[in-house]
Amino acid sequence: MEDIKTRLIAQARLEGFDACRICRPWDVPEVPTRLKAFLDAGYHGQMDWLEARRHWRGNPAALWPEARSVIVLGESYTPEFDPLASLDQKSAGTVSVYAQNRDYHDLVKKRLKRLARWLIAQEGGDVKVFVDTAPVPEKPLGQAAGLGWQGKHTNLVSRDLGSWFFIGSVFTTLDLPADQAEFDHCGSCRACLDICPTNAFPKPYQLDARRCISYLTIEHKGPVDEELRPLMGNRIYGCDDCLAVCPWNKFAVTAREIGYHARPELVAPQLAELVLLDDTRFRSFFSGSPIKRIGRDRFVRNVLYAIGNSGDQSLTVLAQSLADDPAVEVADAARWAVMRLKHAANRMA
Image 1 (cartoon, rainbow, N blue to C red):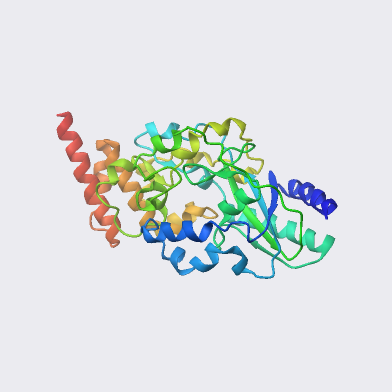
Image 2 (cartoon, one colour):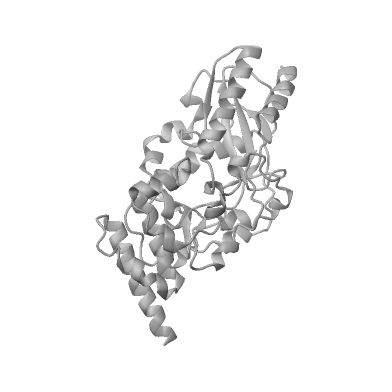
């Protein structure tokens, strides 16, 4: 089996993956306890699907009992620019690096399927592929396979790829040689914890999603708590702060996939243009993008929060025009933005 493993790694590289490691589905015995603590604390917020599928997410072996190996793949999406630079452009929005072009779910899954078909042709067996949306604990499996370790920000960090990489997995009935698990290399570093704008980490290695800007801009439905809105700044989809400051990124490799290279219009998009998107224009502008899945209302809500934080008085009239929007979260955000801008103007006066 060592021969097929060597060829598998080579084939994964040909398919576009930057890392390939193997573990067993049962190599993550700590997951059920950690998941229970996360859910019991209510840190999952509105993500009810985490609770609904906790049995599978907590035990990969239960997801597909016939599986004997999990092939964990990593694919770099490292940006070519400073992802935090746009935070200073208050009249523009900041979009998470991974969402500045094509939807990675589609790209990674196609690669996984090609690799899985290759494996079947070579050795037989059955396979199932997963990317993010299935109840699979990808980060713990990644650590068990030696792909990286879960850092203090709870994301997977690699000594070879830094923090900027997608994770995909191929479950197979083949009994492939497993790799050694990776161990923690964070040391005393607190960069990811200290930079978080909303203090979303109760302690190292724990995340309260209810305060995380990625959760608030993507998963959270309805209005965001008013205390958190000013802390969101101009982040309109996701947040990269804790990833961007990780010192292990000095080893990161630039994304080979052109579909991960940023669309120029999404590097620092103008809030004045984005806030005017209706549903049809929103769907057209974000066709093929992961941003499309949150819908126009939630996205424009995020843009209005950024407008309220911008201090740009020229945006007041645009925010005011949405104060009676049919979407409750949009109308609420618009009124809040107008109030914030007026208060900013009064302070300046």
